[in-house]
Image (cartoon, rainbow, N blue to C red; front, side, top):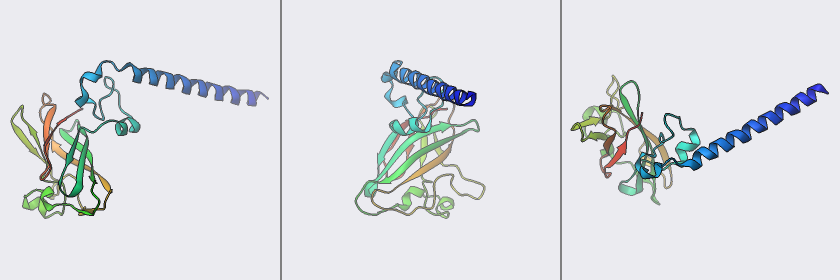
Length: 193
């Protein structure tokens, strides 16, 4: 009988820990802390001082920018994160928001021969840091391939794909940059990290 009592006690302790965790989590979410003043900074990393977001947090937050392109294409920029290696990785989702098949325009790859030779990509994208007056292009690997999503040519109606682009990181003092992709409007996004 002592094993049954131990098992019941453990289950009770686990249940108590879960309830306490949920209570603390809802109290932290409800406090707000005055972040309502900065709607643009609620990116997928816009959490409380240095805490890391979980997968559900990133999906529930609004994107940094939504850009409408040709043929019903919609690019949602979900994050722009600077890593310790000196790169900025921009993540997002490219969706066909139209009712017909969307052909991905070749212009999105940019006009550099080396990138165009590697197939369709988002290699034409840039980040502009107006503070330091510099433009950053998508990085390439040692064989000239762009460090971005490649190999897609069409999207069916309602279909979407996750995309990424890597750029050199601007100086630490520059957190707001303008993201540009050919045939799409430009948008200011916030870099975190």
